[in-house]
Length: 195
Length: 305
Image 1 (cartoon, rainbow over the protein chains, first blue to last red):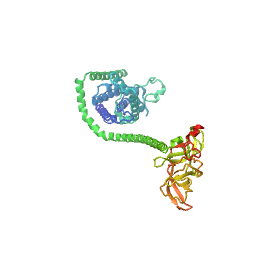
Image 2 (cartoon, helix red, strand yellow):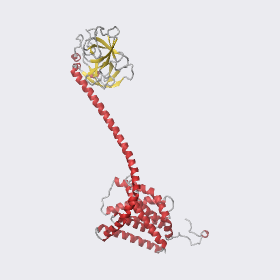
Image 3 (cartoon, helix red, strand yellow):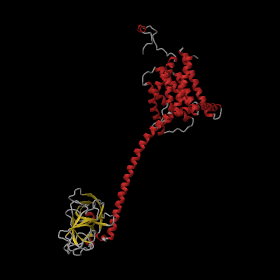
Image 4 (cartoon, rainbow over the protein chains, first blue to last red):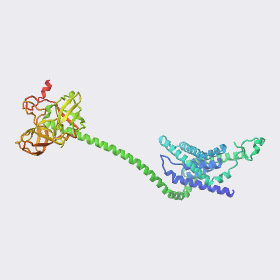
């Protein structure tokens, strides 16, 4: 393991720990319109968008495990949900090459929604009585709105913090299909053909 | 290379999913086993960090809580203000109802004690009041359909809340409404006597629109009248063969001052007993006074047609 990789892992660990502490010690206490902002899926989303599917899934699993440990909750639930979130965010970045200022906002809202639904479904499957009805709907709506609002600044912070290292360590994306240089147009540029 | 990457990705993903499911299953089914011990150990390690973070972030939580409480308090304040408005409205309605009840009870007691029941009193609610000082008139919610006719005497609650007093006369009637000319109206004249001396006179308004000042004219100058004496309806007119519009003995007012006493120009001022500004209910005496009976009731007359 190279030094850069170790540094990256240490940074990601620090981000995970800071996120869990911030979430459990602050954001979970701040009730806004019946819900709380959920930082975990946002950070996982951000790591997925920056580092790809593997990084997103691994980070989601790790931060979920850390959360469950900190909460002394049933292990594996949060890990399972967040690894799915991280993986799909990473895949979305890899396949669709998403760019633009609104991507974190949409991805954050979607990640939060998937987390909320996934967590509810798992809890339901494990036999918990879900708070169905208006309460749950209001909580999901409020959390969704708050998280969507936080998505852009969170993504900006994660990008500033570890984004560069993640992108550098990211495996090269597949090159787009080309004609193998047979076209005279392709000879004007050394980079990949713009799509 | 690409296939290798894909295979690696899938393997890691599968590994993570399996690990999560194993953790979930083990954690869910094994309450006191090794995993639980690991979890407790991890929690023990994390506890001081969490506590430190919790303490460090407490001011932020407090700030947010303060903001939230302020917003809540503002909302609660609005709610309490609305409740206070409702309570005040209810209290006002209650007080009004209590006052009306008191007036009605006083009127009923007065009718009974003054022997006015023989005049077939009809209770009525005051629905309008003349807005000008030029005429002092009320409209009540009973009319000819209730047996009210022009000339009927009207009594109301006394301002002291004790008994009743003369209010005026019915001057116009429709099927369900009647107009009452109040004794402070410029055109009102009431044949009265000073209660103790039996000195006769005519009570008129002292100044138009002043509900607290009446004048008693044509009192014999040799009669000794004083402040504080009660003035009641005479029950007769100057022509004793003609009945008054008013039954005898209804309180009209109390002498408040006498200007030029004993002279031809003496003016006897009264303050009416009835609180003419705040009347809510009145009773209209629909019975008739028999001609020449000097105020005796002929309540049967109407029944006889």
